[in-house]
Image (spheres, rainbow, N blue to C red):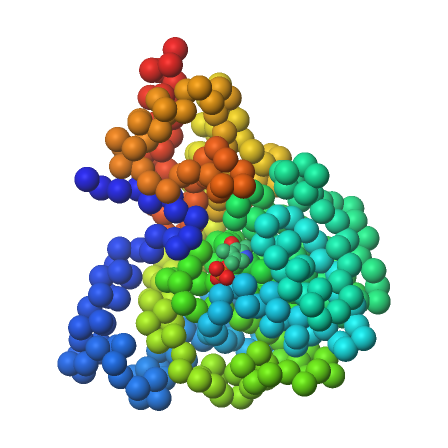
Amino acid sequence: MKKHNFSAGPCILPQEVLKKASNAILNFNNLNLSLIEISHRSKDFVEVMENARSLVKELLNLPDGYSVLFLQGGASLEFLMSTYNLLKVDGKAAYLDTGTWSTKAIKEAKKLGDIAVVASSKDEGYKSIPKNYEIPSNIDFFHCTSNNTIFGTQIKNFPKTNGLLVCDMSSDIFSRQLDFSKFDLIYAGAQKNMGPAGTTLVIVKDEILGKSGRDIPSMLDYQVHISKDSMFNTPPVYAVYVSMLTLEWLKNLGGIPAIEKINEAKAKLLYAEIDRNPLFKGYANKEDRSTMNVTFNLTDDSNKETFDKIWNEAGIVGIKGHRSVGGYRASIYNAMPIESVQILVDAMQQFEKQIS
Ligand SMILES: *Cc1c(COP(=O)(O)O)cnc(C)c1O
């Protein structure tokens, strides 16, 4: 039976990407060698890395002066690594707390210095994005999370700041048009919207580096990785390759303007049903709703068994809400076709018929 996978991460990837990726395990570039057994210094792999890095710049429309890295350690390591590189020894940074991932970023940053949390939506269960907060002017950087994977909220307007603008875009990078040149540092774990787990994308403005006054361990130093073209040590070759294939797929589709339209159509379809169907209610505030992770609950939890049976039988997987929120979460990342979203909407309507 065909499955409709709404998992929050690792995410689904386009079928054509999975096919090419499987072939490369057995016979990469007709070398009669596996991608995962050739040298990362070989011409064939160096091309993959260069292609992946340049596709990122092209798709995000980045001006000169940015470096693109494919690192390891997940977005979770970037919580610390970004601070190491950007927070001056006696410096200060400001963070916006919009959910679990922001909280974790704040925790790591606090290990290195003075961190101010400028606003938080914690008291209301992270249902909204705080607005109208003040960012102190004497900061090295301001950090925010563009999309809150767990609670289903998304920043629509990024604030102005005197410091550098740093953003964890793990779960919505490449999903919508933004002026990416407004950001000084962007990081994203690949497995939400770009590829398999195992690599982390880092995009950094070169001129901001080397100013923290810290003695940064080599593996945590962006400048070290940049000077080695993202191959300071053995890179996660397979994760980089599959990410490259996904970025090629996105480019052929028409890039971010094209996928943004599709993503908006998918989100509109699903939120419209949540708002129409009396058996459901959305979790996040309407104006802050994510186009990537759609969180919703039953209006009457005693119907849970009935609804769960219906979507299970429709081949739907991965819509159980995060354990800290409960209810349901449908992740509709770039590779999710609108047909699958329609299957979920159909299941919600069948549920309504069955209950009434
Ligand atoms: C999943 C996620 C992370 C953690 O990513 P890892 O790669 O598992 O470390 C961080 N931030 C956001 C917004 C996420 O969705």
